[in-house]
View 1 (cartoon, protein in one colour):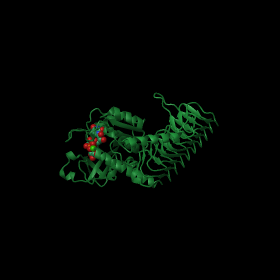
View 2 (view 1 turned 90 degrees about the vertical axis):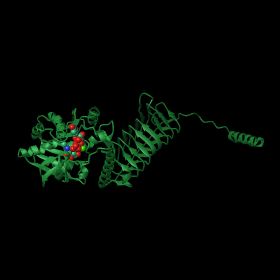
View 3 (view 1 turned 60 degrees about the vertical axis):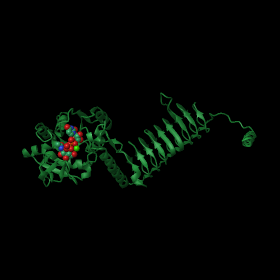
View 4 (view 1 turned 180 degrees about the vertical axis):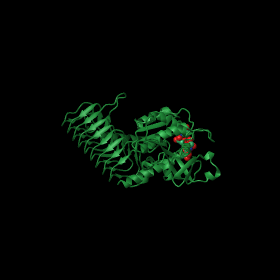
Length: 448
Ligand code: UD1
Ligand code: CA
């Protein structure tokens, strides 16, 4: 079955009270629309169309980053969900598979649920749910799984409003039929909108079948307010924590570990309390992340240990058995196998060779105020504590830098580099100085 996806994301989201289009608000460090796209992508659709309207420019830019193959179409005026789908259909010209339509502000739909809609053999299939509080949802008029029509809350009778089976908004329909049905939609209803939901009755009137597939209410949760956004974040985190534990990850205090949509953690990774994963983190099996670490855009290999209190930023690549200790920041740097960076260090734009030890307080001075420069340190080198590596600079294999050195020139392999003022000792001078100062203090007391 070939699939196309239409993601509706043109609405303003007035109740968010925000300049940001609703679908760009984030949970799990990813815009809401990224969640919908991720669920839809799991079906390997042939085409993905996002319908943007409010904040279309920002939405187009974001979608381009999240899913470069998705196409964004504009719905200049929001005349209803049916009208939104109509804007997407020209982009699907010639496609004759099944179209799955979902909302960009509904982040919890599971791929398995979309799969069931894709596999349904009915002409139109609607994802429904039993609502705890059906509120203003559209109601599904059905006998068992056989769906007759959808009635919007505004247009529903009291009897229809008493129905608990509601429309999630996710609908699947054969493409050719969808084009025909959408073309026939009218807006003679309480909202004066083109309702996508009217395609069900239209299909039935043609003697075609319509079906309800149901899912837990949680999956259909939409986000309309900041409070709902916060609840959605909590729900998302709960899902990710449970999933990680099922996949063999140990978390000492799971409620304090924060995941991003794309966090990938291997088996037997152990994570301490209060760890935050930003976007794009992968951790291989058996690595250990101690308490209070903040990680984003990094890759941590088997056997590596990180933290407590470490910060890994985009482009941090840790090979096997690397050790990163407390108060260490690593950005855009590749650390080869067995590198140790124990304490209080900044590594930015650096390549560090196998087995090298980076002493406490080392800083790569990578930025000259305009350009960033790289630092290269060879294998089995020893960077003394408090070394300033003024980039661009290279330290050779097996070289050593003296503590407190400011390294501005390349260090050959096997050399010792000392870049600090020469020390002088003045015998007895401290004793004399203190005697003088104490005598002065005693005189001042007498005088007062
Ligand atoms: C819609 C459904 C309703 C369902 C509910 C589930 C219709 C007519 N009604 O109602 O049966 O129970 O969702 O949440 O479909 N959108 C556009 N362009 C538009 C209008 C909407 O892109 O012109 C997008 C919105 O951004 C949103 C989604 O479609 O993501 C749903 O729109 P919304 O106005 O929230 O629909 P509801 O009235 O809640
Ligand atoms: Ca809604």
